[in-house]
Length: 468
Image (cartoon, rainbow, N blue to C red; front, side):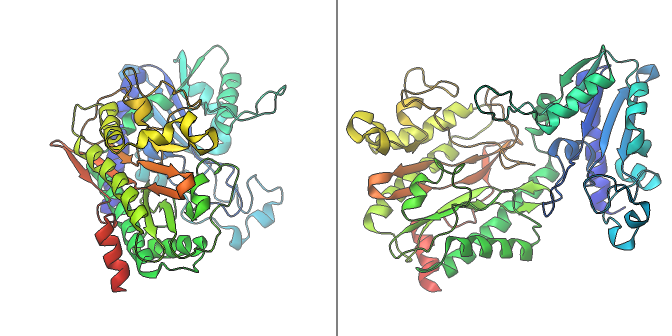
């Protein structure tokens, strides 16, 4: 085993131990990624990976109590050709075993899987249902990730079940009389605090994304398509050792950037426009992954190489907001205090005027985030809603195995937490759409900006573009 494999093994063993200390005599069942789309990334389910370090799809982890206060761990894996060439087992055994269908970088039941995971029992996936009944015999409760997010259905129709909900339903049918509970909140809480190896991966992911932003500044000019920016960044990531992006491209220039987030779910491919001189380009695509951990950075740059006076004015206000927020980050502080530090900057510069529905008109009141109107109100908080009618966006999100990682803002900040700080400003009538997003690590003495290498000050941005 490589040194990295040994380290990962020690980490996942400790994580499984911590999880079982929380659930007592319950059984835990966690499936890995499955039903991988043709052409899709073979990216493991984050909860499963966190507990096993296994990249192979279609696998299932079971942890169950055993006699004498011990526990049994079992890993169910597909046999070598079980899913070759398709999402489901192929009927034609001869075709299934053709050499071109041989999976690569997969674990199979047996000694190799036992050594890689520290799990003593490894079985073919086909034995899962029979063995789960036996493994869960002494448990009254079975924990599974139930995929609790509700999917949309037209009025009058029941919403479809997610894959996680389907799996949880299958476990209920398989183990009648058992209480089936959601393991996701327990693992999510564990994932809030990153260990030194997770922090190193996050730091490297942020460094790779920062390199790509510098390359963008050297190439950016009128006449480029938004897609070229995304493509250049993806090339740089792969050159620097990142296998993939954490999410799809979010690059938008000119007027469409003002509505990028309002219409993002409707404009499925909003990244496709030729940039014009004098415009800003909004690049929320610092999304390089490294060793399964992701970065998430955003920068806003002038297409022509210089900010106009008006662009510079508002850009420096938006830049002042994260500086104030980041300065407030330290152990023991609540996330609400950090958000309010940014909101106070916006209030100081009078940006509440852009949240005034009567003055601006409903169609022009979009985006001062975090909202000083809301967060600096007497009772402004993280769960309340403003008079604008929709939930008020806060300042960012935790980051780790997912771009929007497990988060619990009820907990004070603690060393090892990592989250984004991403104030935004949208002024439709001025064509202003600015966001600056950084990755912040809480340390024992304060904080570290993991993404500081991505150019963000006006002088730095214009200097790089001038020198090319």
